[in-house]
Image 1 (cartoon, rainbow, N blue to C red):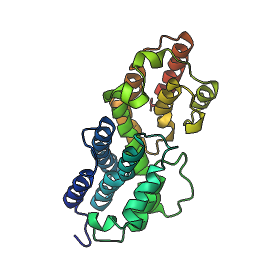
Image 2 (image 1 turned 90 degrees about the vertical axis):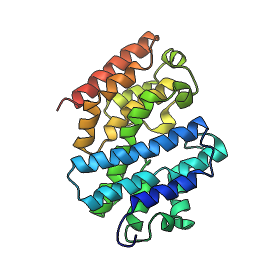
Image 3 (image 1 turned 180 degrees about the horizontal axis):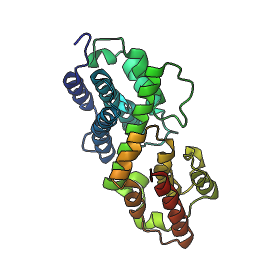
Image 4 (image 1 turned 30 degrees about the horizontal axis):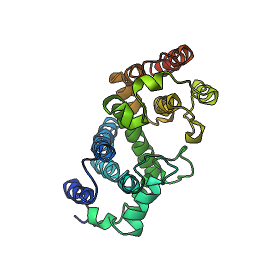
Length: 256
């Protein structure tokens, strides 16, 4: 494997790692599917961008490893909430402090880049990365992660995602601060979320942190935004009106 990324081998190692967790648990299953879909999204974005074969393979490897800390978070806390664990930091700990990265790949020349991309993939804002190659992959994994989260919000159970039914969520309000933020074209800061509708809006507002036009093209092609919005039946009149404004603003962004 030295001098080359062997993704087939890395996938085998990842599958062995998953054997330590309950694959039948809904949240664990969700994250396994998400991981492999992020690999696919990373490949698709990288290919559309015209990146080299080496960068495509590297993007896929980062996609495979980006959420490895999630499984320990679920095992300990049965939660995705950032207040329970920094899953990105846990992933860096598992891979680089415990040394598991060498099981995935013998070549260490990508270590700093992979470490940074994983450590920063869930940051609210991406700042302070000076190396252009590292910044490219840090941006790419963030886009791939958000792109697959569009699929997750369409396919997975609302109860698993929000611990409420879609009908219960649709009766709730959108907090003023969350609405003002999304209308300003910015992502939602996690601590500002107060209601389940705030969480749903925050998932849609991920689009304001997309880095590459190629990612936006895929979101537009898949008609993700209207489909995600339509999944929650907003019976609260104020919420319904606000969601119309949010959808209109985002669809204008995608009209390029």
